[in-house]
Amino acid sequence: MKEECFPLESYPEIASFIDCDSPSYASVSSNKSPFSPQDSQSQSCHSDHQQSSDNTYGSPISGMSSVDDGHDLKHKLRELENSLLGSDDFDIVDSYGNCMETSLHGASPSAKYDWDLIAENIPKLDLKEVLLLCAQAVSDGDIPTARGWMDNVLAKMVSVAGDPIQRLSAYLLEGLRAKLESSGSLIYKALKCEQPTSKELLSYMHVLYQICPYFKFAYISANAVISEAMANESRIHIIDFQIAQGTQWLLLIQALANRPGGPPFIRITGVDDSQSLHARGGGLQIVGERISDYARSCGVPFEFHNTAMSGCEVQRENLEIRPGEALAVNFPYFLHHMPDESVSIENHRDRLLRLVKSLSPKVVTLVEQESNTNTSPFFHRFVETMDYYTAMFESIDVACAKDDKKRISTEQNCVARDIVNMIACEGVERVERHEVFGKWRMRFSMAGFRQCSLSSSVMHSVQNLLKDYNQNYRLEHKDGALYLGWMKRAMATSSAWRCN
Image (cartoon, rainbow, N blue to C red; front, side, top):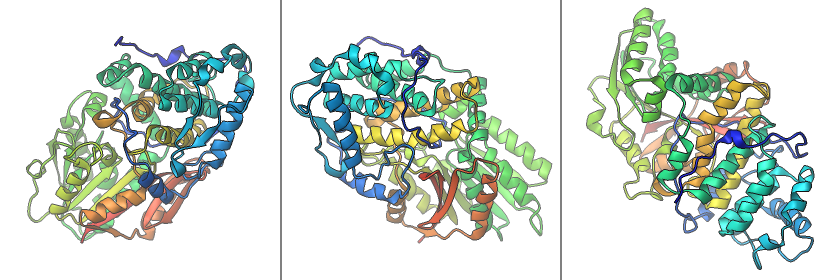
């Protein structure tokens, strides 16, 4: 198959944008970004929809919450389809019940579409509904119709410098193209054709860190939990499974430096990944030196242990557990990258939890995106991805000017590849596999953990953080966890766990 590169800059900016509901969300994009395909039609979608009810937020802006029953969506799609076809010949029906999996019945509608006429009426079309029709065609394997929507309509509606939905749609379209054009490693090559330098990528990640509270939400909530759990400990060992630049631990060291009776001895084991290594421009020794220098300046005794391997490779002997040290384990936006039972018989997601349980940690902190894309069939996953990342792009929008070049580069390099991975890839090559809190709670319970209640001081720490951000961010204490949301959409949860 021909290897193609789909530069996002090729999408034209047009003067007349559609009048659609501007969605609004915020996503904690991980600093990883891998890719791939196969087909997920055999995967269960019924259990996923049931679990998605844990997300009680629904976006009034997107009009397509992942917890909707699908009737409004069906109605809108039917209206759009009929208006484009000029008849009722091709109803869109719900063939997967609550999973919102739909299919077009009858002969291929592509032959009946007058693409020139549709293109002339682009200002009257709702971009989200067109995306859904295109995604449905991809799901049905109707390649002519899918290409018709992509080439004749969507390419003229999206823009990486437009409104939030237009920017997001550029990347959703990229994912749909990749789903049709490539498979496996070809997707990696297509999306890495303009890999930024380590300095550039680090700069883009810093922009995202500053303009949105999602990383800081993870760091501050987890640090507050760890500080409380270790209040009386003189020797602390922290295993961080997503250490990145190590910024989180500078904040904790600063907090523990002034502890009554003197600071504790702190040892940090950092687990690494190749994307973080690329962003840093070097290995974990850079992180260790940075944290060590800071701890020394604060008068805190400190030691760093380098575990340069992926979470799938980590075994007990790699973690250097020592007697006499109180152990804390940190999972910040990490576990959703671990393949589970739907991907591999190794099921590293649950294996890693059982491994951590065997270490008898005093506390485990978990922060994850509140989204449901792990085992969902393609169309349902597309809807959920569009809903979630609409919120993300709108939350970014309030902090940056529309034509801000740094913002555009940040979205392209820190977010777009995650989106394409979720849409275009299947099997082991789809690493963006988010689950809602209800599913994480079940996994942790089955691994032998019990949930810890979060104190008012943890809530207060995050509330103080949000004072520096837009008023549309929301914080809720529910189900024993903290939910961070944008408008009415839950974006991330933070929780704490102990061994039974």
